[in-house]
Each structure stands twice: as structure tokens, then as C-alpha cells.
Image (tube, rainbow, N blue to C red; front, side, top):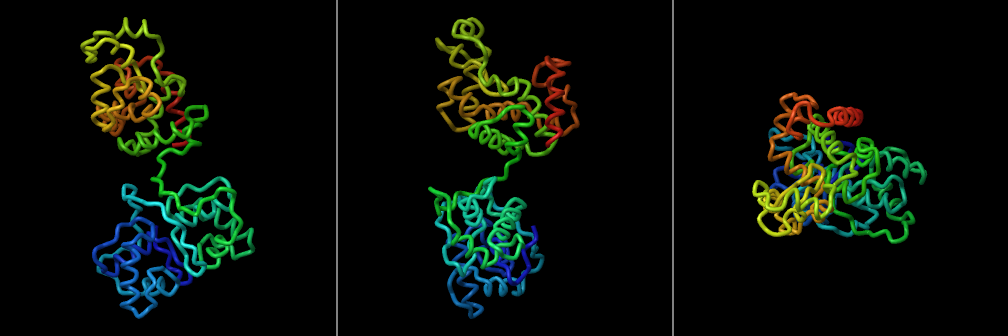
Length: 352
């Protein structure tokens, strides 16, 4: 997004880091959206160079000076995205009513003030944060702008907080590729926080990050799991032993492997060989505990691993139909349950 260029409003800390980088300070700051130690130190350097009070905080005078300072050639006022993989440590909110702190802290303050639905801690002045800020400003009789100026910040700090609210700013969360409402629309049932978290981790990890990729993935896992009914293969010890015990094609070589490594996850991971490959990839040896562990901890990530190994994104990007994608998953054309796969693809297309 473009930097906020109103000299009376201190914008996001991500934008401020971009401004400092544009002013030529070395080493360039990581775009974290937080007033971390590196940003404080560079801010102090900037303030000292311009004969401003050296505080390390981004007050209005510092912000205006940063906006007006000559920038490097080819510098862009478009704020780069926050680096999701950068380590983000929790920190107490900046509690000086004369200084606007991080947008992550502001989102935490609004959540503490009881506004619904709670905001995701993105560290960005995104649309939900602007809208909730407007509600807050309207409630406390301030100009309704959606921007976090000093008066709004001070009012937010002073506002009564919910019981057990913590002034520790939660870590910034990576952008959700699928929202909980969208997932529940597609699956046609509620999804737990644990399942929802693994779903988005899976989408990010395996680059299932375009609308066609997400629609096809959601359609296939919805069908394969019966709309989240079956994240473990159906059957008991005797059935799994008969089906998979000593099945060398699956790498089952030890007594009990048939039941231990029965199908788990939304596209059922099966067999010692496949469990070991997934454990090695994900870096979690407890995967080898077997079906129950994978189904509960990695129901979607295990499916994403299969998706990645079978180059499903490439197939989707080629323009494949839902039947063609289903055939790759199921092993034949038309795939079993093709009408159900089409139905879930339609539902996914309604919201993705």
C-alpha cells in the first residue's frame, strides 16, 4: 500500500521502515511492522542527523521530517509486505500517549476494548482495522477517519479493557489464504481453530496460493474427507492388518505397520514409506507415531505434501478441469465421486 502521506498522521511502522530505507540508512531495515531495536536505532540516527529530539520513537515531527527527506533514486512509496518469516517477538505496547506505536499494538488495543469480530494481528492498516478504528472513533466522539493519530492512540490506551486482556502485543500472523468463513462455507460445517491453522499453514507451505489452486485443492480434500467427516481411514485393526500388513509397496516391513500407518489426513497418507517421507520433509520424527498423530496434527499439511509431490499446482496451472484434477487424485477418469468433487469445486468458486 502507499505510505500515508498526511504529515499530521503517523502511519504504519512498516511504512516508516520503508521511509528510513528510502532515506539511505544502512543496513536496510527488515519490514517487520514493529518498533524493533534496529528500527529504534536507525530512527535515533535519523533524529540526530536532523536535530530532532533523539528518542527512537516515531512522533509526528519525526514522521513529517522522514516524509520530506530526500529519497534514494528509484525508491518507491509503496510499502513492501511485512516479512512473514521474520522473527517477531512479543513486546509490551508503547504506552506513551504522545507517541503512536505499532499497528500490531493498536490492533491488540482495539481487541482489548472489546470490538467484534476480533482483529487479526497483521501489523497493517488493513480494511478491518480501519473499519474498527472508525467504530472506536465514533464511540468516543473523535473525528471518524480510520487513521490512528495521536489523539486516537491516547484514547485507545485510556479506554477500559476486557478482563484478562494483555498489553503484550501478540505476534504478527501471516495473511490467511482462506478465511474461516470461506472454509466453513466450502466444507458446510464448522472448522476448529487447530484444523483451520493447519489448513492455512498447508496452503502457504506448498504454494497453494492462487484462486484456481485453492479452489481445486479445497474441492479435492472436501470430497476425499467427506466434508471433514473422515480424517482417518475407516476400519479397525483387523481390516488394516489384512489390507496393509507386509505390503512392501508401502514400505510396511514391521509387525503392526498395517494399522499404525493406515490412511491419515484429508488425502490419506498411507504406509511406512510415505509416513517416513513426510516426517523427513516436515522435520517431525513424531509423524512415525502413526495415524492418530498425523490425522490430529497435520490433516491438511499431509495432504499438501501429496499435492506437492504429485505436481498438482502445475496441473492446475495448465487449466485442468475439476474432473482432470480429480483423476490425478483418484487414479482414473472419470474419478470416483466426480459429481461430489464438482459440487465442492462449485462451492469453493463461490467464495474463492
